[in-house]
Length: 227
Image (cartoon, rainbow, N blue to C red; front, top):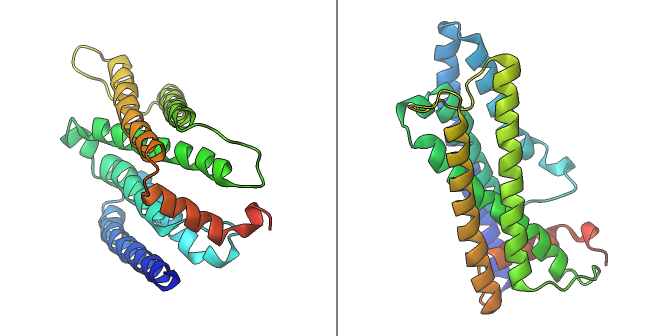
């Protein structure tokens, strides 16, 4: 059993490294073209994305917290789709649905993050918490919506202070309000999906990827949970 778990973790790490290498290669090629065209703002952005994605792998030995590879894969794919494809490759302008899909995905990922955070505390015998599955689901939903709202505030602030267009003007509404509301709506849909799925798994005592990620997180980080 332990051997199977180790093999599963090893495969996940290999997949993580392969995906990271492919994405980094694509961005490196784009970086060459951006430099030749002297698009310095995008050069800075792509360089920042590449460094941000690479640092967790480069500095892994120094991290006191080890995160499951599957979660790291989801994070780098989302960052690539949002920042590189969205901002640098102009997918937000090319495809009207790109922003909505990413916000729905963000709702899923943030809901998963909120669910895992409370679920880990609930499973830790050193923490006196015994929460019902319904509460975990509600917390995951609210957590995702709260972060989504903070992100919309960030977009509004960047547009107002630096004159950017992170809030995409829509037909009939150049203010960006409609874009903001649709972002929050699809974020809520994504958060609701993951919250209901998590509630069903916990209520029916089924095993899932969530259980595997939580157990591996606890096993890799015993310093966070006492002896």
